[in-house]
Amino acid sequence: MGENTDVTVTTKAKTKTLLSLLTEPIQWLQMLSSKLNPTFVIGVFLIYGVGQGLSGSLFKVVADYYWKDVQKLQPSTVQLFVGVYFIPWVLKPLWGILTDAFPIRGYRRRPYFIISGVIGTISAATVAFTGNLAATAALMCFLGVSASLAIADVTIDACIARNSIEVRELAPDLQSLCGFCSGTGALVGYLASGFFVHRLGPQESLGLLALSPALTIVLGFVIYEHRTSHIEKKQAVMESVGSTIRSMLKTIRYPQVWKPSLFMFLSLALNVTTHEGHFYWYTDPKLGPAFSQEFVGVIYAIGAVASLVGVLIYHKRLKDYAFRDLVFYAQLLYGVSGVLDLIFILRWNLIIGIPDYFFVVIEESATRITGKIRWMPMMVLSTQLCPLGIEGTFFALLMCIDSMGALLSRWGGGLLLRLLHVTRTDFTNLWLAVLIRDILRFSILALVFLVPRTGQYDQLLPSVVSENNTTHELDEENLELVPINGKTEL
Image 1 (cartoon, one colour):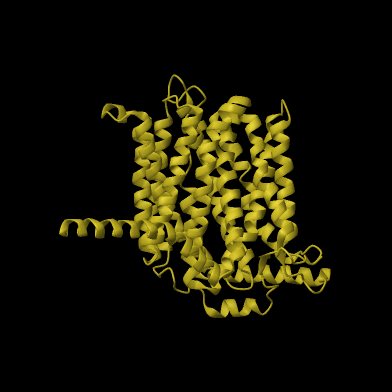
Image 2: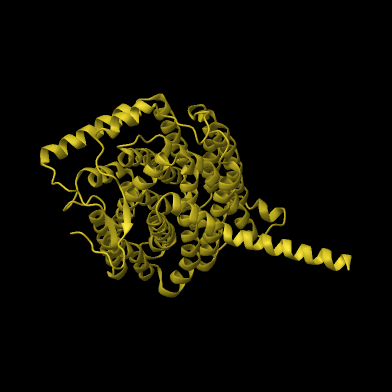
């Protein structure tokens, strides 16, 4: 009897634990919805999950095969092209100023969702269904797809920044929400990408990139936004823009702001990426491991799962650590994970008896987990640096600084591959490119002193900064889905 009772108690405990694991995410989303706005959570899902996650992952894999198999370009050239269609992300402050200071028919957000969706849909359809498209024309289409994602991203980021300031204790949770949405979307996109490339071909698969901007167009029509009650004169608009720029320049001069901003820029710029060299080597039938199209998608999908694990580790265990300590150890682990790339390129994994298919999973998982843990606190820090009143534009400015670093990382990697003569058929010096990249990753540890020692819930900016900005704040950003029986105000 005693043994049966123990078994029953153990079974009930396991069932309770399983139910808790299933219901905890739902309860967490309900908590965010109740403290913020349920439509804000939906907006994050659409832009981060479907846009950056699903479309971003499809974009990465399908575009790689398109440049390699359709346009037949060298990896160093593709690396430079990737930097070019990353430029719209560098221009995020411009999109932020447009949405903040130039309303269309009284709306500051809805029209820009629609505009971004139209640009993305036309660009994706053009590159997918136009035969014998020149490389330059294809690059312009990819630039349009990227611009569509960037413009939509600016609007939701403004909402995230505002909520992170007004409900400061939820700032880490909001970044976790973004991470979970983008990670889940990326997982689906990567799993599907290899299948579609194999079945449809690289060019036809690009048509799938029209899904996200099409949904963004719909979002622009169904989202309710408080319409501006007065029409601003051109002079007033220019004064508003000038006031915003002056506030941004004043804020960025604070040591609490420019030091971590400089660190984020340098940590990205020095982390040169050699991704295209890896991709060409992965798929080479003679000199590389000759991974199939489907397995390449699986590799990236495993990386997306690993990113989710990184977000989960941060959300559950690391939110209470000080910024500087967390960033230091995360960067150290990120550098160590890069050594696995070197081992793989040199094929030392085969010497110790680990097959390529298994080792690449270990390498991708380690890089994604440590990379996500390294970057999550920096995103939280970015939201904490935004003063009320100009939070949308200022967050876009910080993301612009990050994007410039990422752009230099891509172009730096392309230049490195070209200098070391890594081509479509010659990977002799690829290991040296990876070694240089790893050394640069460890060198970033010397810059961690730029990150503040404060906790992730502490206020960093002097309160007078936000007080000054809120006196000339534009309009409250309150986005809601239109009720079924409601009317859209035109």
